[in-house]
Length: 284
Image (cartoon, rainbow, N blue to C red; front, side):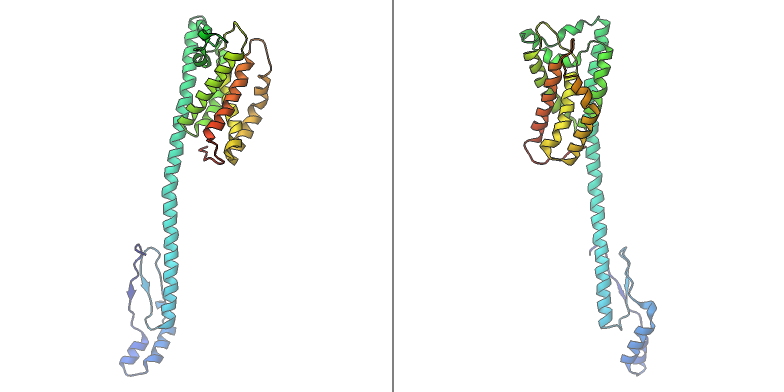
C-alpha cells in the first residue's frame, strides 16, 4: 500500500561467511536460519520496516508474503476506521444543526403566543374576538390568528407544555419539517372548525396544534414503516393518549371540533411528508 513502505535490510548470515571461507554454503545457510531466531521477519504496522534473513529462500519468501498481507489487512482496517470516523462526525453535526433549527421554530411559535397573551392580558383580553367565527367570511382570518391567542395564562400554559414537548420531537427532523406539519395542521384544523363549529362563537387557542403534533407523531410510523417512528408514536400515545381522547368529548366552552380536526391534520401531514414511500430516513 502507498502508506506503508517495506524496506528490506540484508543481514549477513553464518552461511554466507562459510561460503566465503570455502565451506559448504548450503549447510551454513540452513544452520544460520535455524540459529538466527532474532533475525526473523518483523512487520511494523505503522509503515516501518520488514527485516528478513535472506538465506531462507522458500520459507522466507512465503513468510514475508504472509506478513505483508497481514500488514495490508491491518492497513485496510485502519483506513476503513478513519473513513467511518470522518463520515460519522458530519452526520452528527447535521443532525444537531437540524434539531437546533427545528427547536428555534418551535420556540418562536411559543414565544409569539406568550407575547400576544401578555398584550391581551394588559388589554383586557380584547384579542379574544380575533378567533375563528364559523361559517363567516369575517372569521376566516382567525384560522391563522386563533392558534396564537388564548383565554388566559392558564390556558396558555396548558397548551405550551405539550406543544414544546411534541414540537421538539418533530424538530429532530429539522425546521422544514416543523413548518410543514404546522401549516398543514393550521389549515385543516382551522377550516374544519370554521365549517363545523357552533355559530356565534370565537374559537382561540393552540389546542388544535397540540392535537396535530400528537396525531403526526402517532401516525408517522405507519406511513414511513420506520421502527423508530413507530416506537415514538407508541410513547406519545401512552403519555398523551388519555388526555387527548378526553378532550375530544364535547364540553361546554371547549372546541372539540378544533381538537378533532387538529388530529386529522396531523395524520394528513404524516401522510404528506412521507411522500408515499415505503421507508423514510428519520433524524430523531
